[in-house]
Structure formats: structure tokens, C-alpha cells
Amino acid sequence: MECPRCKSPVDAHDDGAVDCAVHGRVVPLRRAGEVGYDDFAELVRHAGSMPTYLPWPMSPGWTIADFGHVGRPPSAEATFTTTVGTSDLDGPVEVTVVSEDPGVGLGARVAGVRGVDPGHQAARGPQSIRVRAGGRSVPLWMVECEDGEVLERAVFAGEADGRWLWVVVRPASAALLLRDEWLLADVTSFGPGALEMPFGGPRPGW
Image (cartoon, rainbow, N blue to C red; front, side):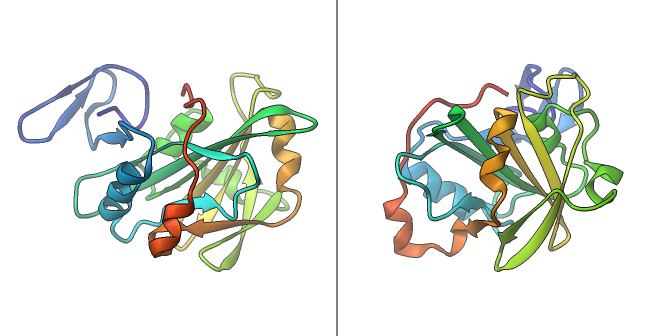
């Protein structure tokens, strides 16, 4: 178990509570122990009504490298998936998609930005990209990275069905892959089709 907001050490208690060295009592982030179908199916069971988005169909050679959720059964406050692959222009590429309730802070941790929510940056000026999530078109805005590593990643965020939706792309140049409206499918509705999902690749370091 981990803190959803940072990489600081946590103490887990017998009652399931988790204390973060920085943020105090938190709802834990649970990441996959084994990146495979069985653990993914368990994530879907624990997600409840929280969507778990994945770029789908996945391009040839791309794999699911990590996934997890924030919360305790039978529902989640946030979910994430990370897929990895390559592009001719950028080499290795990592894409993480986070769906979360306001105030959770997982998206901000993945993106490496301050605070817990994208706030005003997710509705300022014209949209940067659009994705299709849950069957509808969702506008996303670019979120600035305060640490100045603008080439290391591109961060986009917006609102989908009352929740924050984050898309974090590493490296930033690979954001051009999103120039066409990406389809983000909610894997909780996949059923037997989930057996076709490919797993593997380097796990993210955030």
C-alpha cells in the first residue's frame, strides 16, 4: 500500500488504515503486485462505479505495465492504468490515465504537479485535446508542470462525469499521439474481451 499523493513511507494498521509520513491518515493506493490478468480482474472488482480507462484498441506492441486503485472494497475513489510502447519519433512512450474523485491527489502525483486537483488549469482558455471516454467526447486542458521539466512529460486534465480525468504522457513530445481523438474504454465493461489484454513492460517510477 502507498500514499496516493506522494512516495513517502506509510504505516499500515490492522484495521486497514494507512498513515503517510507527510499527509497523515490517507485512503491507500493499491498497485498491482503481479501485472497480469488475475490482478487486473481484481482491480475491476474493487473499482465499483469508478471507471478504469485504458486506451483501446491498443496499438501493436503496446502493453499494460501498471494499474491500481485508491480506496477500500467495494468501491474506489480513483483508478489508474499505465500503458507502454514505442513510436518512431519518440522511442519508448508511457501513457498513464487516472480517473478520480476530487481531492484524492493521485493524478497530481502521477503528473508531478503541486496540489491535489488541476483546478483552474482544467478550464482555462481553449481546450488542448479531446478524448472519448465512456462513450462521450471529453475536452482536456494542458496542466503546467511546476518543476520545469517540460520535455519530460505532458499533462492533460479535464472533467468526465463529475470526476477528474488525467492523461500523462512521457516524453512530452509523444503528446502528438493524442492529436486525433483517442478512445479511452472503461475496462469494467470488457467482460471476456479482457482476456485479450497484453501485459508487461517497465513499470512507471512516479
